[in-house]
Image (tube, rainbow, N blue to C red; front, side, top):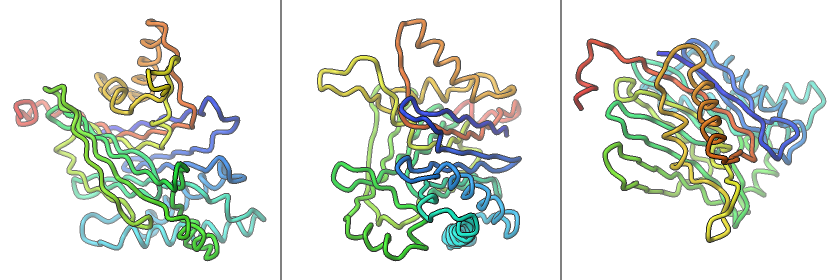
Length: 288
């Protein structure tokens, strides 16, 4: 297994509020809210607090069903204490937090807020999970910060936010894309437990993945590119050497320039990928 990460500022931002860290068996990313002051710092605090929790308490596989709840609570309470000591407001902690780690031949992903999970199966299909929060037309992710701010939590509840988790399957041998979605309570933590043997790659992404723009709008005036139209180019890793994720994204950008397409993401984008190198002795994945 190899790990690589990528982060890039959005075209409409002056400060990158995304932050991502990784180690031998984990990736952690946070996506700060652009309308909250110093959220780029809060994103960093959340990432390092999450890493500290895993260092102190270890990581859990499938045994502790409350692991993500305990992790989130510990992270935000300790981060809130830190920002008070630094004289910063609590709202700097307005950031999505996504944590992925390896344990017992699974990759476990816990998402606090919105974002994407992009999977490539051993049989060549792509699976995309998108978690989104909406109040009317406004995006309103549920941040861990609401656990330590009772008044803001009350106002968030009154906003009647709808949380939707979508699943998109792009089959390798079919042109028919399958899509389903379900609604969950806004404070429900999304967790996935993914057997390593079933996937070629597992990627966690900030919501910037859904903000790629094409130069000209379509017939409906929409310039945003559907995520399912870009993942097969960005996440089809042909070479696992070195910085495989960064290289694949740069190749994709060069390909766009060759056909005179200017495509950019207006929001910050962070991606972290686990890439499973093929075992030459494993013939099952080749014949599935």
